[in-house]
Image (cartoon, rainbow, N blue to C red; front, side, top):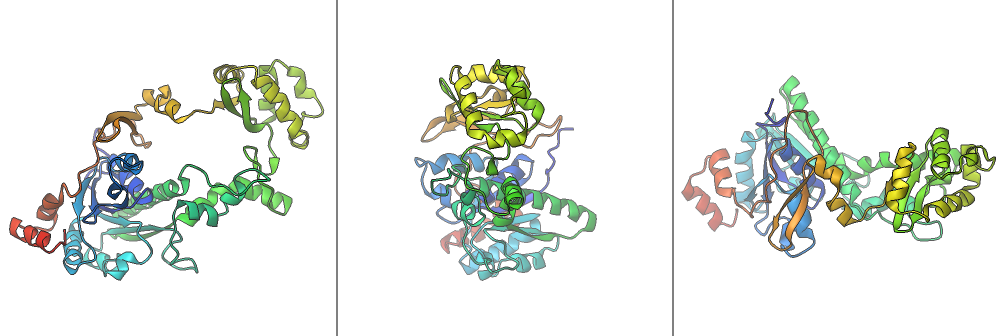
Length: 397
């Protein structure tokens, strides 16, 4: 079986920045035909230019897509989208709330033209109801609004955001999952769907551990840095080595005893200060100091090796170059290298969604702005060269 899971599905991708484009990347890597619909100056990340840091993200998230330009603010552009919709399966966007409705091309209007259409939207707080519905949202503001920042950082320091834009990518993953679910449902019912994804909803499950500590203690616990929220699980921290740091976690009593053996101090397993979860949490500062004394005598590789040999959950803290050279990602075929117009050789990733006996499509460079406009309008809207040129003259495309 070599056919891609989403072969035959045609998608209009109005995605911006990370959230929507990552959804489109996953759809394209699943075999869908993804047409990136951009303004006449290009999507936000493209518009920053090839020499900006955003250029790498744009390249990463927009592989295996075609590009067409469309001015949705113009009457001609709106009419053109309505011509395209009967011949596509999915339209998705992560514009500010109400943007598409403002121009008469929201879910209700487009699905009236194609009842089998899946129209999907991802916004900060969802579009269906609630007092936050019209609020603008980006990754940092969602980390603030969801409580993530309140639990991130050190006890005496300010609330912090995670450096990784996880709220955007979690939302993009949920957007993808909802679209694929809607496509499956359509196969059973023949009907399309309107999908409403809230970034706030998507982030909430990530608070599971912190919420558990909250309910157990009856109040929010102080920020714990790299330790377990509420400090209820120990060891659970990042420890120093003579060349960096390692992360170690013991989620069962057996893991703690294995770590004691790995450190060459098996007697600590029965030490009353550390013999139970409760005791270790009570004596967490002493425990972490003890582990640090051991780990500082060794390199990251040495600690990791002995931990693995004893069945301890451990990992070295890698920097970005380590990740780009990661042998496991190489072995899985996750990493792909290509030339970038400003950076030279860059490393990108294939889809994390893998299917046995089906290789993901080869990664391509992101499309040039509007590279497929003519082809898409000819094929999906039935327009001839003269009509397409008239649209260009009217600045609709």
